[in-house]
Image (cartoon, rainbow, N blue to C red):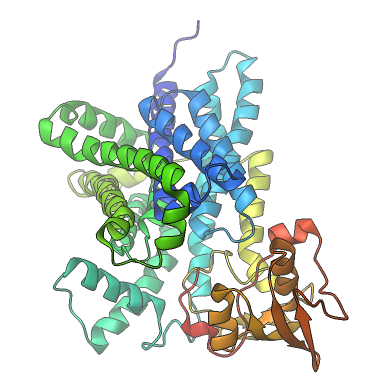
Length: 496
């Protein structure tokens, strides 16, 4: 039996901490979209949602178990593959990093044959890919915000979110034109500095602290439920902590974990989340039809509204505890010790090998797909007020999409549509839909009825099929490509 050296023991502790935080991120993602979890327990989506929930809870029970972490990552990957193409950006982050973990298991099994510890091998294999994933997400998010729409004080998503925090928590935050400019430029500067600070060794600890504070602020917007994004980003930020800081954190936790107020702050939200998830499953299994068809119609009814709001408050509570506690620890490392010594010790590996390079390449491709014309949503351009079309964009630097497949140039005008969620943006809002998206919608829903105009002719889809049936894209393209509305005013919408 091999004895772990100091570095091996630290790697094992770090993997355990990551597993715990990754399970919390998975639960936060489910809580932010409860209808996904309970819309149909017998459906494939509902079944996989249940698998993610159960896997996350068993990881929280024993985060040291590699088998449990592997099961959770496998469930997350399956959830996103089923949900594609309309997957929120935070779930894409969960997907890519979970995929990196699963591939690290394969590499770790090979290392185990030579006598190396499996946990150490898994940690050393996936952690660099996790770090690069975070850097790329920040870089693409920053670049997408360099557009005229984001700096429009009337419609900027940044100012909308700032107002949401003020309204939700009745915080006496300042307001006015000067504050608006500070929020706009502050968010841009933070997302510019984060990838740089995290890459540069001497500023790495400061970058971690800046990222934690940034996501703490985002998590306070309960309306947009950014706690799910914060929960996914915090574990990745902590991947950049040097081993010396992690060892110090472990010692601090050992001294504090048995204090009553610490146990209360940490365990209460976990118990509340577990109880709510169990209640959600039972209620939806017993009253699925009633909940699904009345939740929106009687949103003012206390049970329905608090059923959805209460877990969000609990999730924000836990997010603040984790991110806030980590931020305070970074302050302690930076300012209660010699900052130069802390910076010099902040070495982490950014070197990837084999399959991990492929994962990060997929992350980069997802971010570039916006400019290639493969996507206009879920390309890490979330809430950027960006408008990108064939040959046009409101970006400061990029004049338009390359539109390599021609999908953005081929659009239709929706005249009538049977579904309300399509009627609002395309009929009432007047936006155009890509012909590719129309084919996607028809493939997904046989009951969809649409009257649309394309190339000067009017066509119908539904009970009376048109003379030129809608071209259905191949299955693989329907799963990978996704486009939002096209047209003037899109940049005024806050969409992920």
